Image (tube, rainbow, N blue to C red):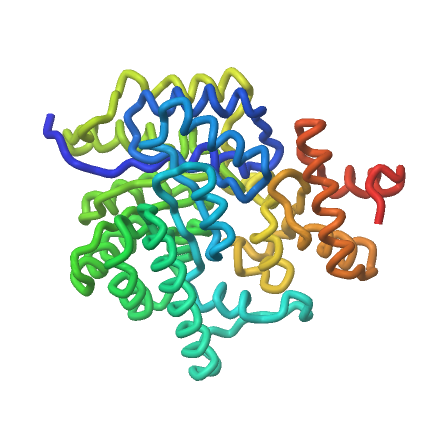
Length: 388
């Protein structure tokens, strides 16, 4: 066996727990985090901004000796960077969209009607959107660096981004970051495209540290990740058991064993004997990834995803002909309720009312340890448990 260096970033407790219907109590998250730490992964990501209870878990894990591995996944704003810093983490993963489709969506007033973003439209609009994004990200990268945080950047929807703009982002952010995550957010890559894409990016950039974060909507995340490493990627990101929203993420244990089986490569610092333990823990709790192409793979709960879906069906769905199944819980946002009222009830509320309902469903989800389907939320409204 040949030993290789590869940064392994775990997203089980961040991206993984966004899987609809999956609920882990705080003690279970801590227990699972320690099992994951024993595998030797370099990063264990959580997201303090989801809820104060999540921030408590992050601070607890740092105090329990996992400070070198725990990383805070952080939205692109100084308040969230400060929140992560207050959790005593040493490192953060700042994330932002890089594709024209998602960037244009987020530049448009969220109260505007549904739309279909044409990324081949106004060059002036797209150039303006890209310029604003670069300025905003660089400002936040400098701020995070100034307060002493180690930074990685996750390029959301990188697989659908303009190649030249992606190269510009990598080169512009490189002085401030340790790693650039290339995200295949809706799982559209194929193995052949992945290999060429990584090779081309390495050729046209300044040899940065590129990690890959691939989703499994078409069932290709494993082979795509292996091809990325073969092409020169220096890091991988995924979840144990492949759990996550829709059809989940690449399964880390499968990638690590796959590299060993295919190429005789063992990753330095990984305890292969410990890899089954996080998966076994999830299995004992009945937690499994949704199969690609299944009805469960069309379920959405995360607010930022729903916010884009209701205005552009192609934003977060690789199969846009299928109606998304919107759920409500700890990860949902005000947009989930906007979708519910405007699509199912044919009425509109104020943004403040949507945000009030979001806070209420988050609290109820934590109390009852579950997520709620659209039908269940309509029943909660009828019963007056949720009030407008």
